[in-house]
Amino acid sequence: MDRYPPIAAHGLVGDLQTGALISSQGVVDWFAAPRFDSPSIFAALLDHDHGGYFRLSPEDPESSRKQLYYPDTAVLVTRFMSPDGVGEVLDWMDPVTTGAATDRHTLIRAVRAVRGTVRFSMECRPRFDYGRAPHELELRPQAASFRSAEAAAHLWATFPLERDGRDVCGSVTLRAGETGAALFTACDADGPAPPAPTADRPTELLREAVDFWQKWLRTSRYRGRWSDMVNRSAITLKLLTYHPSGAPVAAATMGLPEQVGGERNWDYRYTWVRDGALSVRALLDLGFVEEATAFTHWLGDRLGDQDINGEALQIMYRVDGEPLLSEEILGHLEGYRGSHPVRLGNAAAGQLQLDIYGEALYALSEGREVGVQAGYRGWKKVSRVLDWLADSWDRPDEGIWETRGGRKDFTYSRVMCWAAFDRGLSLAAAFSRPADTARWTRARDAVLEQVMERGWSEQKQAYVQHYGGDVLDASLLLMPRVGFLAPKDPGWLSTLDAMEEILVSDSLVHRYDPAASPDGLRGSEGTFSLCTFLYVDALARAGRLRPARYMFEKMLTYANHVGLFAEEIGPCGEQLGNFPQAFTHLSLITAARTLDEALDRQRD
Image (cartoon, rainbow, N blue to C red):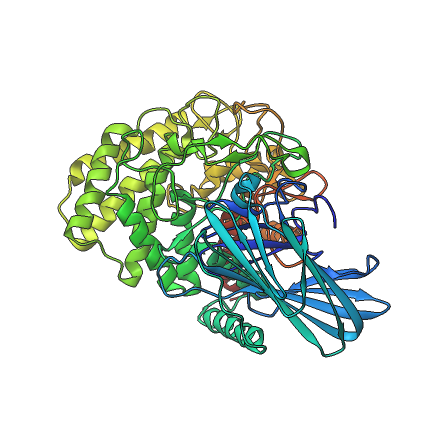
C-alpha cells in the first residue's frame, strides 16, 4: 500500500449524497459522511498514519492492477492479476433517490476470484472527524461497530473479522467463481447496527446499482464523437450532486494540493454558484432536465438570502444552502505528501465576486427553455438582485479565481455583470414581468462601454485580466459564450492569439500567470483543465476547428485510467488539486458539444 498514491490513481463511487475515493490498490482513502461536506471517516489521502483507510485487496504484493468502471455505471472494478490467480474487487454505493437526506450511507465492497486461487486480506481503520475523534470497537465474528462521540460505523463481512487494536482485519481465500463481500455503513453515533444481509443481498444490490446508472444514462441525448468521455463526465457530475437539494459540489475532496508541498490546498466540498450555474447548460444539452431544474430551484432559493457580508448573493454555500463556511486549519494532518496547511471550510465564501450574478442569471435564463419560470415572488427576488447590482457593479472585487492579493477591477467580473443585466432584460420581456428595465439597460450599456475602453490592452492587443494591466486571463474565454463578443470579432481573435502565445503550453492552458499578477499565495500551480476545455470551446466557436479538435483529443489523454479529471495538470502530466472536479467535467461536455456541432456544419 503506497503511503500517498497519485491523485489520479483513484475512482469515485457515491450514493448521490456523499462519495468515496478508491485507489487502484483497493484502498478507500477518502470518505466523508453523511454528506460530501461532513467530517471524514477515511482520510489517509491527507494523512496516511492518522487519517484512516479501508483496504481490501489480494495479499500477493506482486500482483498487477487494473481499474475500470462497469460500463455506463458508477460501479468501480479493480482487478488484480498474479501467477496464482485473478481477483476482482467491486465497489459501489446504493443510490439514495428518495429526495430526503439520510444519515445512513453504505459502501459495498464485493470480492471474487475470476481464475485460480486468490487470498484477499482486509484492514478497516476508521478515524472519525478528520482523525480527531477516538472511537470504541465492538467486535462480533463477522461484524464490527465503531463508535465515536458524534458518529458511528458498522462493518459486516462474509468472512471472519479479527481485532487489531481499535480496528479490524480479516482475510478470505477464494477459488475461481467464489465470492465474498464487506459492507461498511456510516451513521449517527447512536445508530443501531444494520441487520446482517442475506447471502445474496450484495448481488441484488449490485444489480440494482447497475440498472439505476444505465437507465439514467440512457436518457442522455448525446450522440456525438466522444460518447465514452461525455458519458463518464455526465455520471461524474451526477455523482457530485447532492440529490436532496440538487446542488453540485465542486469536488469530492478537500486539501489536495495544486502544487505538491505548497499551500494551495482548499476545501472544495461546497456548491459554488458559478460552477452550478454553468452546469445547467451542459445538463440541458444532454437532456438531463430534472437535474438542471433542481439546481435552478436551489439557486432561486439562494436569491432570497442575504450573504454574510450583506451582499445580494454569496459565491458558495453548503449543499443544503447554509451560507456559513468559516475556514480552519487542520494542523494535526500531514497533508498529501506534506502539502499543508490542510484547510477545512473555505474563507473565500466571504469574498466579493461580482461575476456570480451573471452566471446566476445565465442559469435562470437557460432554464427558461424547459419551463423553469419564476413565479411572481421569485421574480421579485431576481428583480431586487439586479436593482442591487445596478448600484454595485462598478467596484473592485476578488474575481473568479478567489485571489487573496486584494481587490481589482477584473474584466471578467464586469463581463458577467453585463450578462446579468442582459439576461435579466430578456427574462423580463419574455415573461412580461415588472422591472426597472430602463435602469438595467443603462447599466448594461455602461458596463459594455467600460469593458471595451478599459479592459483592452493596446500593448497585448487583447482583453486583459483587470483594468490598467496587461495580464491575460483564461476566464475571458467565456466572453463569446455569453454573447458579450461575437466569436469571430477581430478583437476577440487577437485575444485568442495572445492567449496562445502566453497561456497555452503544449495544448494545456494556464488560468493566468501568478508571477505577473500576484494572487497573495506562495508557490506555483499547474495548468487548469477547465481552462483548456474553455479554450477548445472558444477555438471551435471561432472556426479554428483543426487546432480545437487536436487540443481536445490531446487533453483527453490526460484523463486518468477511468476517465476522471482533477482540477489541474502538473508539469509532468500528473493530476493536481481536488478530485474529481465537477467544473472540469462540465466544461468537457460543453467543449465536446461545441466541437461536434462545428464539425457537423463543416461536413455539411
